[in-house]
Amino acid sequence: MAGHPPAHRSQPTGHIVKQFFTRRWFFIALAVALSLGITMGAQPDLARVTSVKALRYAIVCVVLFLMALPLEASTVWQAIRRPGAPLLASVVNFGVAPLLAVVMSYGLSPEFAHGFLVVSATPCTLASASVWTRRAGGNDAVSIVVTVFTNLTCFVVTPLWMFTLTGAEASVDLAGMIVKLGMVVVCPMALAQIARLSAGVATWATARKSALSVAAQSGILMMIFIGSCQLSVKLNAAEQPPAPSEVVTMVVFTGLLHVALFGLGMGSAALLGMSRPDRIAVGISGSQKTLMVGLQVCLDLNLSILPMVTYHVGQLIIDTLIADRLKRAGPD
Image (cartoon, rainbow, N blue to C red):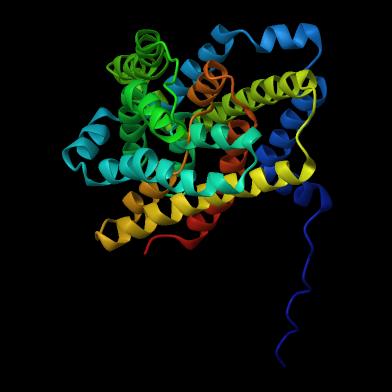
């Protein structure tokens, strides 16, 4: 007589809880950082700290350094030698996005329309684009090349787009922006690659790629907190806060813009016969925008920062879901 199958043993509750927090820790921490920033950000002491530009730049520099440290230079050069994917992602990020956003902006209130255009004319962010590209199984070298290219050219491209779309010249310090972007984008990655010249550092960083990614995500959470604190200050200073319906419409539109850019990137890369890792990289880096540059432009032009902060938070949530789904799907 065949024996009965062993009874199913349910996993201990502690193990289930630990597994849940391991998989969803970033979502939980994001919600906490956003909530604390919005509710406490207007307090004078906290507002003064989070308004310090040097602090924001320092966080971005550290995150970019951590992201570039595990990356082998040969991988980046390979992406440059095959420029199809980086160029396509850059066109989507810097060319298609503003054209799509200007059409969508007609459905937004004047309070948010121009800030929404700033979102579309902002370059890609390495701080999260590379994390989520790698998390989804994509070619993170492509996302780094896209980030470097769009950030190094944004001092010209972003003002030109804003002048074209808004009819007013953007009052941006071009020389200052060149220096800032060089310091916070190029220098950290260059320093990381110089550090990798040491065989010991290279081996250590390669073996700890996952841990360094978690550290980079922690830096992203700090940027979310700073951004939400600045948002709290802005909302508290407003004489008449925007209507809830206007806010909801803006939130929906920022999400739609991001998903549309991701879909256009993935779809166009597939039509051109690119590999799955390159398609993922084009989709993610073509649709992600950097909070730092976006906030800078919004503040320079005295525009609402809410669309930029909303887009940044939304892209982290949306791309986490997309990346996890792509990772589970596995290679073609």
